[in-house]
Image (tube, rainbow, N blue to C red; front, side):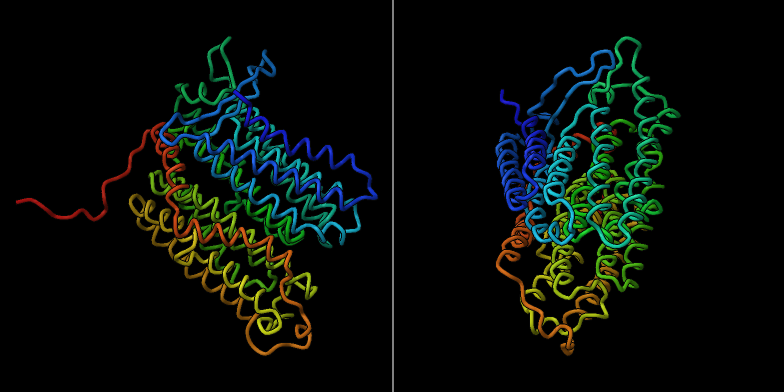
Length: 505
């Protein structure tokens, strides 16, 4: 069988090498090559995805090659419904973001080919992490992603880029060290002479409750930092603000999903007893994230920080659904990873269009922009509506499923999380009102509307948000089958209805 998954992972890495070897005097060639490789990766993803069978094994198209035999380490890849959703998000978002970066790389005054090569390398590592069925391989890729992201922020970001890059790196390195200790501890749980990092074999181990608890904490802190979950979130607003808009779109929309993916694909099946034990605590932290992110977003005056804190609130919803431990909640969370990725990418890219024209991130420097730039205003409105989960858009479906699944087990948590919808309406409408409505200021009178290239770039995000909002069933069918199998490994079933209908003779 053709190694579709290995091809999918290594193609962007090969593209990064090609881009890096191009002459520095040909920046356009680097841009075109990188975008071309990302589009080819999208094609490979579609071909691989079409071979996935709903109702089949949890992992399909599996590939395994022994890498370091004495350690039991292997190049082991597999495609589940959950990973397929996130691989598709990555493959779709990358060419869009690379296209949006066209002028950002030039404006930095630094190497254009390095800029594009780093993004392709980051994509390769993310795809490998989403597809890995070897825990050590996942860890290696999980940590390696820090390198290209650090240089992207530190070399091409704003005035405080070095501070933001170092903070991003230190937070995530700390989480990675704890995860490494947990990975080693998990490996040692296997019988001597038969120890392995293979996910399926580790899931089958009978680990005592105390050990599970410690290992759970090691993995969860790393994933909670990456996600990010309150109170381990503070690196994100700085990183998203100092990164270029396209980098911020990629970071919040795609890269951070590796954290929530790890919670579903690794934490739940590996530590079922600890998951059930600590679920109420994680649900509580998720609710705090939802409310905290929304309230802080309302008070921001920087457009990018508004979107960053909004993402913290949305990540809280995702984590809430995962640890509600219901089929609707887990499926809704996975669907939310995709819809949030599309929505946040759209918001950051539209914000980038605005900032490039006005030269400012501050709300006070805008006003009345809908008159000279009505299409730009329309883009911000649709992107904003997706951020507050307007019915008819993909975010509504996912958020509704999360809240519904959570309510069946944690009624108070679901009720509090629902307040996040009201907060989202406030910060989105405040941002739109202060930038787009009212009298046009002298500084915004001459601003040009969206150009053709920009419209072509961002249109697929809106098309997908609407399409998945109107017809979510195809993606939900793929996701639901895998989440059902994952929850079965945890050993939980959906609770009975909270309000049971009265019946009988």
